[in-house]
Image (tube, rainbow, N blue to C red; front, side, top):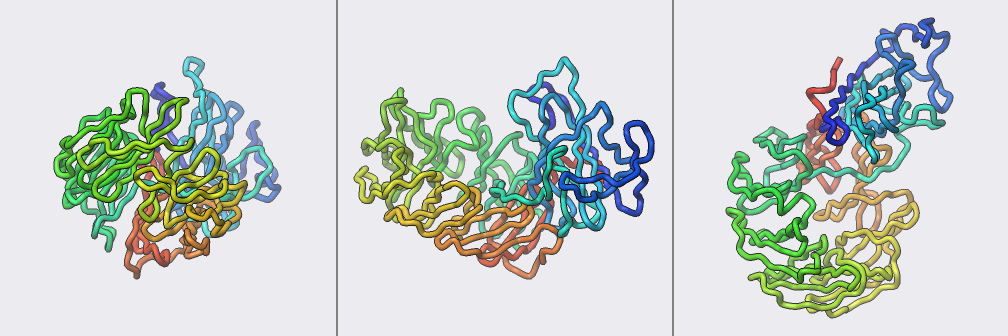
Length: 479
């Protein structure tokens, strides 16, 4: 678990996982201490695996808390979950009961002390569930205590793709507070380096690996040595960055300044600003000839397309319709208007094509396709004609694999599926319930899921190797 306290209270929550097999079960006792006369029943009315007295199901002073399944390691033995307290509860332990038919997980919470402030927003506490055998096709229950429901696997999920990159023969990802580099072909760890706590993003440069956190670090490809560093404070992991020479980033302090950094030592080559009352949008676009395009927003007064030349001088400024830049296609910028229309523009701001309204457009463009979320369906729209290329029912907003034009989703949080972004046709699936073949293929992509990192072949979904990504190695008790 990355952090298990409420806000700034510093309260540490220890999750203890107890795993029980049918062969070592003892009678369950009720609150009065008498042996239970029957097996527990799940929310759907089916018979659930029994717990022994050692499992410590919730007592009168404790409560069962909801939890959400996020994923699993590729051997199906470790589940990644988020426990969701409903008020002023701390999380004490996870109780796991399993037999040949199913797995029941109970998250046990205790009321916090009266002098501790309750969280004002929903808090999700990551944890691991360690199973004695692969989950396989067994039913998984207990995620909604006291609420009628069935298998906790029965849901579609957007893929929580972690920060990864592949740079030549190097695969780089994040585990807790470490940047880890693996050999892409074999999975052997080459190096790891501690970074400040919090979200990070990675960018491959010719000179090394650029790490964006609350600041910037340039790491050597061969051993992870620190080559250059920019002080924390003026750029963060979610601030846009484009280009490789120079690297152009938006200042997080005022949102109106761009900094162009040399890729070898992160020194500032130039800085450019928009007007004092303006802010730069979240999309920067690298154009031909070293130019940078961005959107300058004025609160309540519209937006402009601004283009900076390779030396940071403002080269052009053109009014934009209400809306936002969402990417580029075939050398032209793509703009999603507040009226729902998609427009393609050149760098002078001239509009070349306008579509009919497309509701629910998502801020991304790949292979001439913009995706839109319509009710419970994912719709792919041609950015030039506005025509629907395909429609997929039941798909949440996906993750892209842009270089292979693939979309990802996770059905029941345990099976990763890929579809062609141009046609919507299924391409491949990866099963994390314990039956996925591993090895015998050449990887070209690193995927980081909540429980594991996997090196895959993006064209056929083969898994060359995988490593578990522990959420709390020092806090989780393993049987």
